[in-house]
Image 1 (tube, helix red, strand yellow):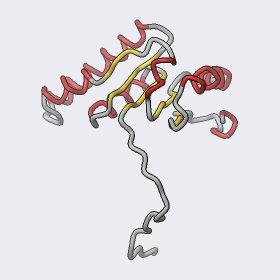
Image 2 (cartoon, rainbow, N blue to C red):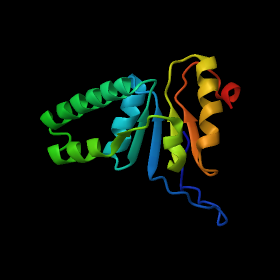
Image 3 (cartoon, one colour):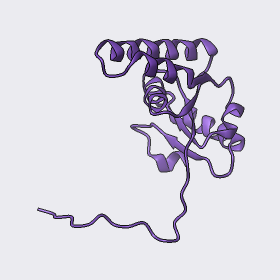
Length: 143
């Protein structure tokens, strides 16, 4: 058995980074789920997919899932409404220019993900964090 007596402290020369705006690429099951939980956590979320209709469908799914949370008393109606207002459509990757964190949750095809990153990264601010929701592709192959 491992016993932890004290949590390690951060180095004194470490810098902090505040995340306020999150971009999500892919409004399918994973992307809409990420947008859902981050919006409920209070972050401004920009959601992108191949078309505005796909983003609208993703937001409709989020709305339905949050409505179910309201009916089960997991969140209030006010929390649902506030979270939905924090989610907006990002019509292009340029909309992610002010995001602190962008999470790619597109289809699980390496060539698609590589194309996304190649087009996305030039639009981001220098200190933005980029992540992927890949489950079967080595992240080092995408980097």
